Amino acid sequence: MTRGATYDRVQSALLDNSRRAGGPNEPEDAGGRDTTANDRRNDVIRLDPIWSDRALSVLRIITALLFLQHGLAKHFGFPHVASFDKLQVFSLLGLAGAIELVGSVLLLVGLFTRPVAFIMSGEMAVAYFMSHAPRGFFPILNGGELAVLFCFVFLFFAIAGGGAWSLDRYIGKTPDSLTRRPA
Image: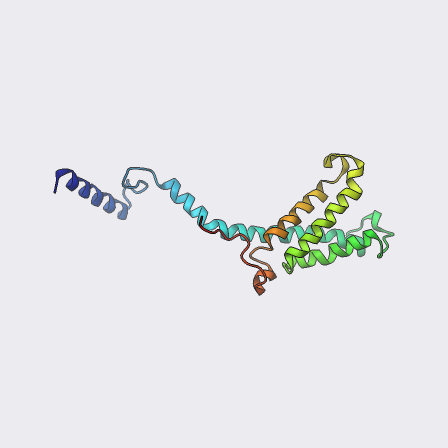
């Protein structure tokens, strides 16, 4: 055995012992490179599928609760919006309110998330182009920011699904929507 090979074996054994003992060389690998950043990155990668799927569920629930207010205001007068006082149930606004009520409740519990979200996305696109776009091109000027935002958030749910905390996932209607697959 050569002197260099013996030296490398001794250095490797010392490095291994210092790691086990929590010595000063712990954040370095055998080549002397800092591995702390890689360990943190690997921890984030391991948590990412779990937390991103849960965050998707939180976004779905909050969005459904916010959207539910529109249907409740149209059909039940709560919260009160003066422009919905004389709403006729069999009108375009009445139909929109029904979609908002039923769709929001289904989205809230995560049942039939993808088709419901797709329908609600379409409703928001129609609402934007019928009500807001004629008032001007820019959503900030025509009051259509919320309609555009709801439209694209619902479109996202139509693609991504309901997340970890949905009835779709519980009863097995959808696969894990954001599970990472190795490349």
